[in-house]
Image (tube, rainbow, N blue to C red):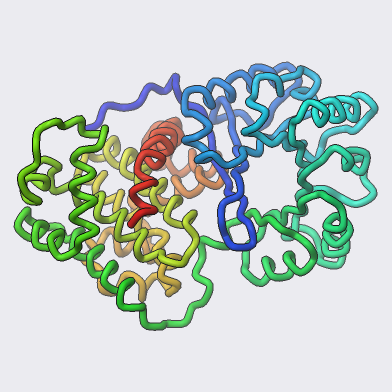
Length: 415
């Protein structure tokens, strides 16, 4: 069984992708808490919370969190007044001002100064004719809530803002129809999990190459797969052969001896490691033409579920939960209902049931991971508590997954 992570290192961080019109990641909004029971920042605790957050950025690394994309960081009035911005790397962050900030002459002057120094500012949940209008000259981004606001209100506002140099971000986007409406209104960036859902619920045939990847994904995840079977699968695919050989020479394994054959490489890596890597490559291949962020989220979910599973019930459960996390995005990746997407896969009954919305501990772990991923830490902790696990386990596992996913992302995208 895996050794539990140190709870003193637990920092709650979630990231919400911000995409452009072509579904490419533009940046990430980072959400955080120092402790599970923190409901919000208070005046006395703002600076301490900021210190924890910057420590987390140093420990995890902005590159692991955002892959080099801008990080949108929420700021309260008190954080602004304490000059906490100076702790952050100017070129890598966007200072996102919360909608509940009281805008007065002091805040206006701070924003003016930040802009003159080269910092980038975003206004969250912007409302027309509000106090925040005073901050528009200093803002590079304005976010509009297109879910909780009537179109008759946000669409004219988007048109007005789009006529300036400000980039308009449609926030809480849940469907592709809303993306189209927001784009027509002048929004150029979109935040929400609309891209995590199938664009259509119709059943259609997969192209031959994607079908081959689906078959590979199914084959490598058979529970009784042997080295002989694996060697046969790998040898049939030149790109898979090259990836196995590159993996054995990667820094993650630190091996210096010469590899004499594909079988030798497979033995050195081990069946479980090859199955995991092949699953990642197959999933990336299935996503050909889709949104890369879908695979990135699948990787994060898979690794987070695996780490939780290792501690919950050992490495065998961890391996099964890794597969569950990977498959949890399969409907969006192949653009089919989940039942159809997994119909030909060699999945265990527990994984299949969890993917189709069943109950049980595996589904609960997946739900806890998804809740944390979306910043709903209270819901995540409640689910984990029902499994008699520590409320710090999922945030720790997610932090581990961020580092791991960054290490394998280049291989995934190359599949």
